[in-house]
Length: 259
Image (tube, rainbow, N blue to C red; front, side, top):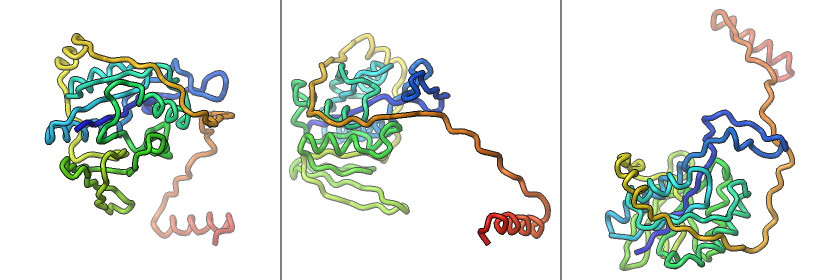
């Protein structure tokens, strides 16, 4: 069984973000990149299936700042192959990146066909979650997102997955393989890997590289302006007894024509 995991780096929003001089992008000087959290869950799910079934796990990621750290860590955790794709801009929009990835994957020896393709169901720079279904559609694979558990029956070439719905509702679906699954979570948190194993992976090398191929032309999303939120005012703290506060709330609502 072969499992392909698509991963990427995203800006760390814990850090202060600054708008670049063009007013349409983030200033890269102030950006710190981290692995997309849901991609990390996708990798963990792939490694759990490897532990259970002896699957081969291949990780592919577009070139980005600190991407080698991600790939060395994936190798230290148990991935069999790690591949960095160069030629896809880290600032490209979702549709352009998906088109390039879908065109590139078939050109990398031994990557496709795969029984399962996994990635996060969304990312901080893809909150609509379009990346995974766009790649799945281009590869002509069925797609199911918001997956939090995967069980595979290799003999029947099917996977039974748990899909999360609003309100804490979980559904179970049977999917014929090969398939693309967008991972929301995992039955276990991403495994910890000792720094010594990461250093050993770095010393051993093993990161493969592949050039991005040109996919079908797409109309990219155009950002016309970007700015930090403006402070519009401050909260008014209401003090006093519950009755006093209630009367003040009623007065405020009445003054705004809401009562």
